[in-house]
Image (tube, rainbow, N blue to C red):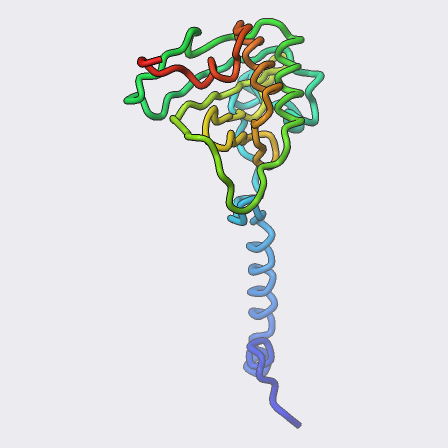
Length: 196
């Protein structure tokens, strides 16, 4: 009769069967607390705290993500970030704008949710001057996870499920109209250099 070469077999022979079973259960529990992200990195399976605070504080997260509850959106606040201030880009609108029209806020939310997934593999992208927009959608007293949109480069959009690509002129036009920009919204949102 051959001897078992497995660790569990050796532990059983030594009378450590209960310990082996406990260790196996611990390993399985630890593995269950990890989720694979779209980038392949592991992340905790525990839900993240909502940006608006805990429900007890009156600013909880809306149930589900933005794309599963677009009709509930009532507000949008857009914050511009300039990651490379040395570029001295100029903008014809403030760096923070509150969109007061629920219809416009929902139109931007729908536009975000219909953007295509970011393609995999090597891509050729326009220059990225470091400008991005943070879109904070809200429904009644609840908030949705923050959406971040890069105005340059490949136009990566994060926070609405898989990373998406904001390459369509329609998306930039809808966002621009919500911010009060009526003409050349895409270029206005990317900013202009002091030289023109």
